[in-house]
Length: 265
Length: 298
Image 1 (tube, each protein chain N blue to C red):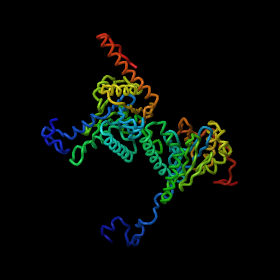
Image 2 (tube, rainbow over the protein chains, first blue to last red):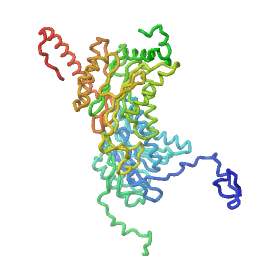
Image 3 (cartoon, rainbow over the protein chains, first blue to last red):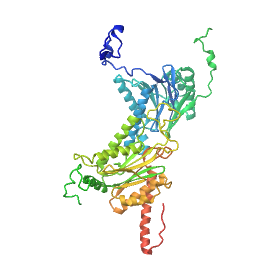
Image 4 (cartoon, each protein chain N blue to C red):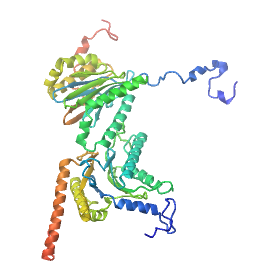
């Protein structure tokens, strides 16, 4: 047997064969954050006449395991914008800390609170985030998120935009990430297909639509939760509620679903 | 000055035979010529104020800020050599940021004061550097609540992060003053710069250690004290700059911010009035020879 110190702690060559040193290679592409681990599901948002409503549930899944159930995926920025994160939760944490630093930088240069939000609107914040995401994808080390930014633009009009891990960005009167893009987006479009429609919505209507969408998402998305966060962003600032419960659930439709599990008929 | 010609005032790292570091004492002189700055710590917050002498009519009013934000809950004001102060603020920001990087939580005011005190002290030890020509006032409001960790995702354990004694009060407003020697103490009211004597005399009249003063009153007092301190020197024109920090339930929500325009203007109006009344009173007293002179309050 090989008693040299180099062999300590290694599988024995005479039993397992010679060690394959190719595993030691540290050149080649980085593979550390090339797939999400702990993930959040959909974020949904819709504009209304004075602002934007945005919501996300409080779940962080580890694969299909509902691992963390008190996760806050809506992050306010300077009390003027809300950033909603879908996708990898550790990348969300990284971005959250990054945004906190950014908020401190803003405080360095603008001591007056009311000026801060004027200088750093949701539209500005979004432009910045889009650049960060695209930069990271160019380095083949993307931040594995899809992000919604809700707030007001430089003319105080409601602003809502999305950026994903590739740096792709777009805006729309209503937006949803993840499963929400398939399940919630059509519902929201019924109420706000165009900017003109959205400008007619009241705050109450918008909140109702979002709550309805969260319910549909809980019914149909297996990686979702009935506790959620919802924020309303207007000129007055951000109103964020982080521990809401889905109300008036009805699972009657479930009986009609066929073709899964142990059903025999 | 006794130090001149002795040779002991030429280098930073050499004591005089009677145990003094003259370079540090000269730095203090530089501070004594700077515009007055004050800090007030009252029960629900901190107020920082500075008298900015207008050195040229070509300077844009209300630009060129002298009070700096170091972290969202921390502010610094200083008297003395402004470039030294700028560097000091840079260092303070680096310290606050590195604390956040390490501990994922805002730096407590006491720790910032300690680190900056150490930084200034290091500039008294070597012959290759000179001490800072500033005295800085550091104010901050440390969160009294269970503060979330930066980037925290969930609620954390229901018992909190621990390390806190239920019977003890944690956090609150704090005020420190750091001198060129690196010496720093915590204060209820601090003043430095040209008008410090008058300002200190005024600060001592306030009930700062008790429940006496609210934050808004402190803002008004700060404005008045800067005006009083300036009045004594009959100096050139000046501008008042004021910031404040309240707790999370207060007007600034725990952040260091400029005092809003309306409140600042009101405070300045009252300050000017108090000074005018004071002058009138003096004249009256001279006429009446010791009339009982009503105390004017706001």
